[in-house]
Length: 276
Figure 1 (tube, rainbow, N blue to C red):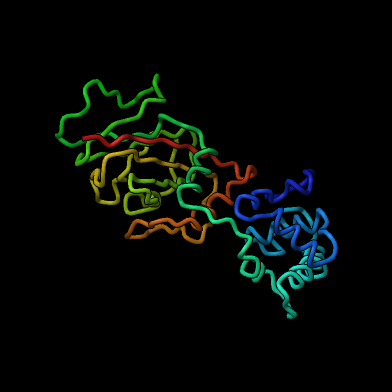
Figure 2 (cartoon, rainbow, N blue to C red):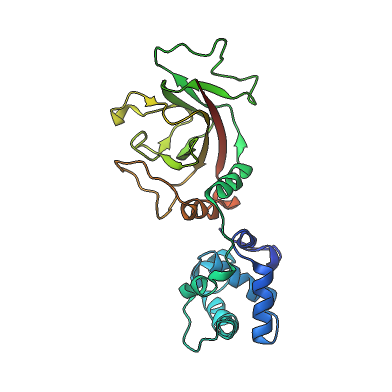
């Protein structure tokens, strides 16, 4: 993402979700004898988000050498004074040195943050294929009542249907009733991540799986579907895996940091209720 023509204090502002910036700025000012400038704070926030100086320069539409000089001359020196160290500082060491300023987030909190950015949809839902009796009067399309939860029974076997209005690369996450988050696409249920607009069914035919068993406990299963025009380049996102990946806070934070407006992404959420 290229950031241009926006105030310095709004660049990399998402760092405030994960770091106690007011306290960090204040402590740096005390140790350094002066407050960091708006530009220096901007570059520091980029480092706290895990971006290298070269990536920061690319994102803020600046020269890489200019960013490196500002960091080395002003930001690194302030951090060294704060941490009472006298050694050459590399950008990758910054988050470790400033660890005490990190805000500890739970998996549920990060999931909720992602849900707040998502659009609720009734275009993703379970379709029961087992012989168990279904909830009387349940309309699986729910076109006129998107706020109503879909329902399946514990022990049912289902297919998961997704109706996309655009083509793109799909990353599908599930938060189960236990609170555990897994990646459903790509996964053993979905090996083809590029989807054409229209109906998509999980499990995909080429996986050799016919249905998804509903296991666990009663409650609400939630889903997040991210559609992007290009494949995501996340460190943990791999195709062809024979196992479902259980996601951590760090996994979700990396995903969230990639949700930039210029990426032209679409994020949707849906849920269904598991009943007796």
